[in-house]
Length: 172
Image 1: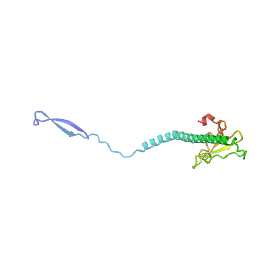
Image 2 (image 1 turned 45 degrees about the vertical axis):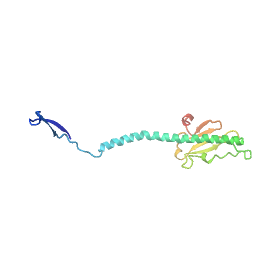
Image 3 (image 1 turned 180 degrees about the horizontal axis):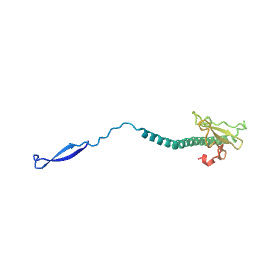
Image 4 (image 1 turned 135 degrees about the vertical axis):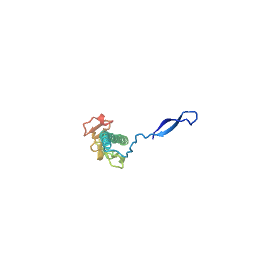
């Protein structure tokens, strides 16, 4: 709604020759619209499609990297378990009473994560008197992981099998 100031001659109001009156001047009336047009909706859908095509693979890689970090932490914890075992028994492959029988990893270290759908299976491989190798093999949702199976040995040497990527790319 707009008002315009209109000055009109008047001799009756006080000493002034002009009286001030406000008068409504109709201006352009805008039609109220509710909702969206089809073109606006299609533009929004195209923008959402482009953003999701870029963001979804990046998000998926980030989540996989987080799961891989969880498996690396479990491998290092299993490595500490093996060092404690060696301190107690003097060998990695069993005890003096049962030589050659490799120790069983604790339940919390056999599968990552504990209690839900497994993403990595931890195993003790190639245990001898003075050496061992721990492996974290991807299973379930992580079965197609680009880094493959993560490994660590008694010297702390990190490695991987089943992948063309470098150790530095996967163990970060």
